[in-house]
Image 1 (cartoon, rainbow, N blue to C red):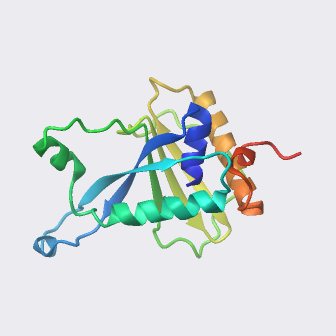
Image 2 (cartoon, rainbow, N blue to C red; image 1 turned 135 degrees about the vertical axis):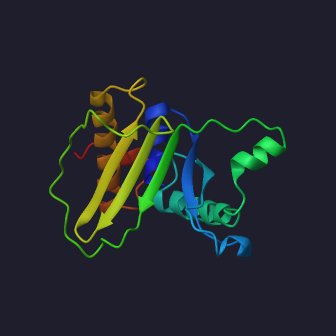
Length: 181
């Protein structure tokens, strides 16, 4: 939800399709097959600047849980079969739950840029990893669209949004992007 607020703020749009991964083997025919089955689900959270973060989060969570009910159906295949244009996804978000949450691995805020970064399928791809003492945000992006300094500014805004949410989750969305006074 916070990432969606960030995207809304930097694009001046209230609805942005965000891809999220769904990796599960719900279908009985996949139980004995070796491999990784990941589908991209698309969430369209509508950001209303007058709502509080908690209000937006509740709706976004309900939308995400609803979308996860259809995770067994690869959207790319469905759109191709129905001869419908697959929607453009500008951003992808992935919360990594890799069993490291008990570790204290986060240093105070540090920003860095790696020149030889893995290419991404989406213009902006954000990975979040949670640790006992904080979160790590990793952003991959199209170098043809963004300069490293632009991404640094965007991630600075994201950090501010997350800090404001942690202090006051009932704050109006329009106030989450403001600098502390």
